[in-house]
Amino acid sequence: LTHNSLEKILAAVFTFLFWFLLVAQTGSGVVTRDFELPIELRLIPPEYAVTRFAPDTLTVTLSGRDQDFLLFDKNALKAVLPVNQPVEGEHTLPISEAQIIRPANLTVVQFSPTTVKIFLERKEGQKPSS
Figure (cartoon, rainbow, N blue to C red):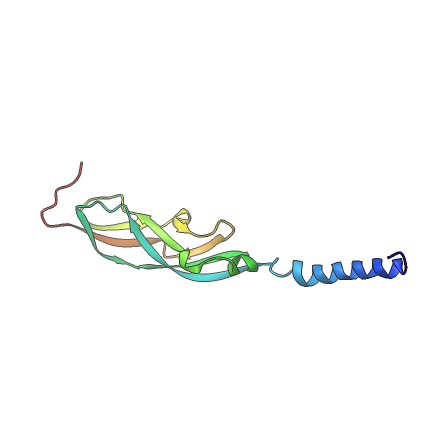
């Protein structure tokens, strides 16, 4: 253990440098990726039905480290929009960045569209809730 101390120290230093260059740097750069997400409508009053809405998907560009994209479930990405206007007819719902469900370590760069059109109809025999 005490023989060839200089060679052992140099070997340890080179091993660390090799590890740092090949392993630690992998995935450290910021990358962007595009995803197509489903749009989910929530808080629809029970006496109403959404008869149509368009579009039903959202295109979003996310940024993060490469390794962050490898470690998450792509199926968990979605946009969740509350239906806050329980009035029959056509409504335009705005989409905000806060409504895009994603891992916290990924950042929204851009998304499109910024609105969704829905059409609400009262179900047969249903009275508005108060």
